[in-house]
Image 1: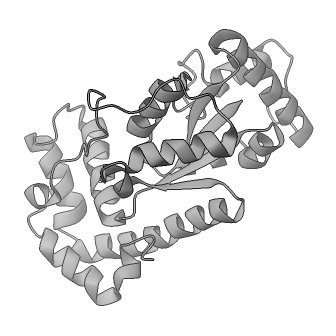
Image 2: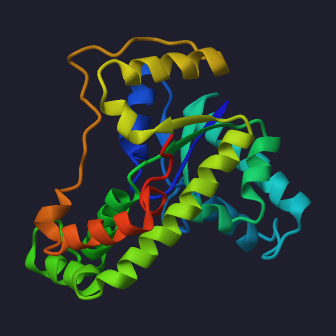
Length: 256
């Protein structure tokens, strides 16, 4: 069985996926549909080899893509076992036409994970992007701070518009998973005592997994990995105030 943790970037997929892997005993294969052909286990590395060998078209039709995905998951099963867990980020669905439909037809089970405070998620994205762009490894380096200042501090109005627009997109993404009957997890809820274990129990009951173990005090906790935004963005409170004027729906994905 293929378990898809479906989420936007910086929503806690790695931490939650690793916890699920420890409990259910599944290997976690993140970012298989990120367009990086250098990763031996990525779909695009697999597909590129087929194209080079003449076994696949560069612009395949729906049926050919489906057959290629079927072969790809058969290979993953042979290497990693019958149950695997993969991450698919929201933007990666566009890399393979009708990817979600293909995955559902192949019997994949979806767990949607979302971060309710979308402002916090976008700040985390900005930090990660600045680190990658500058080749830095620490959140508080001078070059990372310069990137954040340029993107957020110097143009808070634009960033507020971005948060508002993006929150609507995340909300629609989560709603589409709910309408499909998928399990939906709220990242922030997983920090409440006992909630993570309860959600893992729900996943087990819904999909019929064998649960090898339970969460215990010695397990590594799911942690908040981003530095406090107030320490990174001098006018953070100004941004918060501007979003508050627009209403909670501008920042919060699910206010229920």
